[in-house]
Length: 429
Image (cartoon, rainbow, N blue to C red):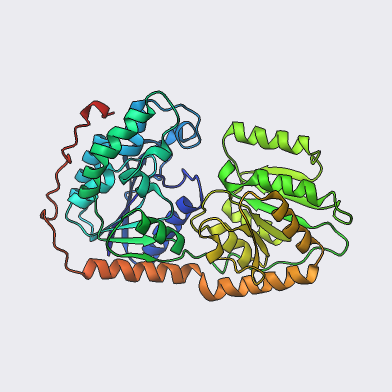
């Protein structure tokens, strides 16, 4: 197959797990003999190859300002990022006309507007969208969750909802939608997306992640957090829970290692929280690490904490920890319960509930046999259900089916319009 993947971020511009997963899937499909081009944002450090096309109206060299909240957006920024960019529409239309793929796969367009989706739909090429969060709900139905409070927020959102987003919906309907979890599938159905939406859970490489060794006798329990450092991921909840754990007899030596990076302001907040609870000798912010280091990091800890406060769609980190033989304490938010069976492969607690998280941590800290039992079952569950090759098998099979399926198109393939007729020229970059 000849595929074109449209993704807002493409490595080395990695923000989170789903961006990393896009790279891994693309590389796996190439190894299977498929030709895969990538359309992504513009940046000086993009891969120097013939497959990567940095043309979207998104400056990846300034991702800290946009993705991590380092700059307050203007109305023009908000329009280009969240609603429509004519520059992106024109660029994607021209590239698809040149590349002529068998299938267009839209992976994620958060901060890249809905213009690439419209251009892909109008190209006449079969179109499938992978969804791992609510970017398409926000972009096509209700942009308000993406717009910060401001004096122009209300008229901006009103214009988008009443005039522009209905046009975008009609101009961008995909042939197929693949959701990363049942939770996400239900969210899109509730939002009014019609057509076929199926769930294909992601997978992790089983050869890379494997069980390690339990803690040496007498050492404190080593808790672990891995993920982007922002409030939705809940590292602040983990720190507050550990403060309760170390106050209990027999748990004074418990530690928490936090791996990941984020906006400077939030990292400073976490440091202040550690000082407030006098946990400087118990909690360590390890910063960003290479994914090549993660297998050893998982194996050198006892319990993985995944205390997301937001509706986590379905993340790779719990599966990686489970494959490494770790019991995982996760929140019940979003799709996480689809990966973790409570009291079977891990423990589940309500999101944001510090007392419940601390209670689960204490249960595991005081019961090495329970940790071993849950960790063993977790590793077995991943081997049986969530291997990466199995995940790619399912994607490849669905992509091939869409390529082979006859599609009725209103516009001949290769003759895409470069402008959806939106009255948005004042917002062009």
